[in-house]
Length: 150
Length: 150
Image (cartoon, rainbow over all chains, first blue to last red; front, side):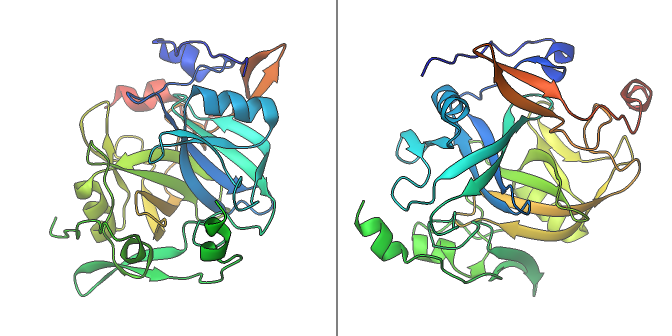
């Protein structure tokens, strides 16, 4: 990785205009990444990226994230084959979030449960309680089989 | 606010299935909120919600967030008039992120810069540097005028 990033400006005008991409990392050195399907805009997942993940993604065109649970760089789809090719890379006004429009290889599935999207449940209030309801239960791969090889 | 949430289960199977909405808050008591336009799916913004913001949003149907910079509940659009009516509320596999599909009132603008979306810039590599380029410069309101009333 050779790409480095300018420090986020304290001047809002600079941060919000065109010019250097200067991600505003949080206390853990991360920005939020929103990932949608470049085909139809469906929200696939939300993840986090550190400077190394941002650089690897921009340099290779393949999405890399930072796994907080495993505390390391995570090349999404390395085990399942569902690699993400980045078609467009965006950032928001204060540069603490990025938006990746991706094309998903392999099973065309992003969620580790085998579903296309991690957002397969709606939340509603029912009898005074917030409950989740599954709206997509189609599994594009068998997680037990796919991740047993990892 | 009367709605409360079950504690996030340590059992992944429980967390990933239908049943109680049990948001997995981070160390600061927040989950990530992704906000898209219910009309066409455009990504409008990314924000954060604490338990109170989640409850207010689910109970009133109007999006409330938690402002980290102001350290308080933020009823989005209260100043600008660009209130967000929630058409659908989703959560992801590990329940540390939510997805709100909203209808935006007022100027049909979400970004404090007056643009429709906060993600008005692409990021590209140019001469070995990561740079941002503005792709939408249409201002639906004048921030200086709108926020001077605040």
